[in-house]
Image 1 (tube, rainbow, N blue to C red):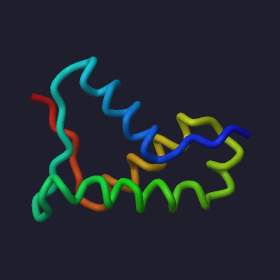
Image 2 (image 1 turned 180 degrees about the vertical axis):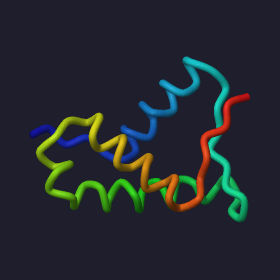
Image 3 (image 1 turned 45 degrees about the vertical axis):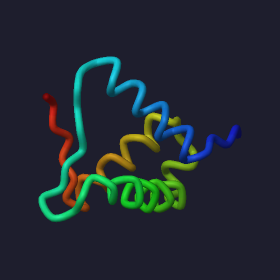
Image 4 (image 1 turned 60 degrees about the vertical axis):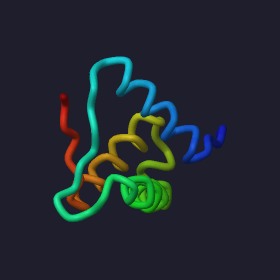
Length: 78
């Protein structure tokens, strides 16, 4: 299985988001600079899940996004 770094995934996700529209992850109690820390924490948790390990990159991205949302982050489109 090919390993892709968290920075690469974050960069790819950023490109996809900017290509579609102007969107931003916001949290009611945290500054935007904290998003990367929460994202990385969620991604590491998702990578430990055996169901995600056997799946595709899309499963990893979905699991990470769900975790980030549980942390209180919301994706806002401008």
